[in-house]
Image (cartoon, rainbow, N blue to C red):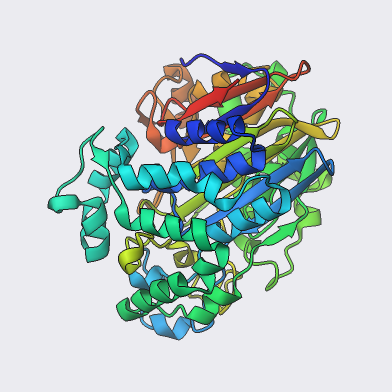
Amino acid sequence: MRKAIVGSKSMVVSPHYLASQAGNSILQKGGNAFDAAVAVSACLAVVYPHMTGLGGDSFWLTYSTKDKQLRAFNGSGRSGSLVSREHYIGRDAIPFRGIESVITVPGMVDSWDAMLKEYGRLTLAEVLEPALKYARFGFPVSNDQYENTIKNVDVLRQDSDTAAIFLPGNRIPTVHERFVQTALANTLSELAEKGRDHFYKGELAERIVANLRAKGSVLTLEDFADHHGSWTDPISTTYRDYTVCQVPPNSQGFVGLMALNILENFELTNIPHGSFEYYHLLVEALKRSFRDRNGVLTDPDFFDIPLEKLISKTYGKEMADEINMEKVLPLDTRPVGSDTAHAAVVDEEGNAVSFIQSLYFEFGSGVVAGDTGVIMQNRGSFFSLDPSHVNRLEPRKRTFHTLMPAMVLKEGKPYILYGTQGGEGQSQTQTAIITRMIDYGMNPQEAISLPRFVWGRTWGEASQELKIECRVDQHVIEQLGKVGHIVNKVGSVDGVMGHANAILIDDQGFRHGGVDPRGDGAAVGI
């Protein structure tokens, strides 16, 4: 097990060590948590290119000591003005890959601008410097990039602009090989000089859209120009003596709140951690939360989501009463992507940022926008083609989003920042981590490193499997199977569980950081 990292002044956690170091370097140069978070975000877009990028979306939870306020920022893009279900006549679903999946405007670059304008001290050029350096001069290919390149090699070969970058010389780059992204470096350099509007309204936007249109996308320059993310209030519930906060819909964050409202009806401290009862309760609480999520989650501008009811204590108690310790709830879910990166930063002043970003599937759509080096997300493929579905495809609409950064407050101040990669698994891993920390007193590294589970489909797999790491006691696994869980033992430290991160701020003000042994991350504290 990795050792917990404790900082007396600041802490940066991310799923790639170079990105964590980049955030710390910005703090050392006088930047605050918001500057450092943007630097981490941009660096991840370079050194974790299979997970995230400028062509994707992001969600943010921010706490500023200046205004003593927790805020949320929705950095997800809307579908284009010309999208229509008629375009996909004869199909059951929008294709997961290729140009037909590129139907939403990427929101991440806009979110950088929003963070820096609202709270930052440094310029965009200053915080982009580490990312630009790694794009221009290269970085060592991570194990995770290598494995995901092998897994998705056929997808990467379908677009010549994509293949030229990610399969140089028509081969898979090896682990620790220097990986250079010259086109992306040029784009980052242009953004550093010309700013956010260059991506959405300027010559760069024109080049992105022209290439995408030539390949068959319906996105227009007007769609890019009209994009804007939005500041909003977080949603929250209480759990034990703490306030747990999430980003509101179109994020699935309320699922994490619902699960905790259910679990609060059980005295987990009387249930041994790692026991059959522990795993069964968490899985069944989450499945009931998914059941409601699947029927209501979409863009709240298009549908009145009954959040007040869903995250109420009364409803949590009703669902808790449904749980049968000798039987599972059958539930179907559609495949979701897993290419996500969560990171968090706390600075010396106490400013805190928990954020998450994604391309949706690994390498997103698999389509790079010409000579820009920007790989486009396929998030729009989550829209439904069923005209009666709440998340049906419509113009200028935000889709159901799995991204859900989280933060726990203690007496109104940040206490725990946490999140994870993993699509459907995000709320599951979050629930495991936070119960381990609050109910069982674990530090972030312990909570993240211990065996985990993920229930349901991952993309491309139509099953209701309960994947569980084989380190779990065999007797516990057998008990789970006996009550109806379709158990699939996976590796002892398996990447299918996602890559989680967490920061805890203790009563002395020390920052405890934890990162996932299943990934390439690092906690950097001073």
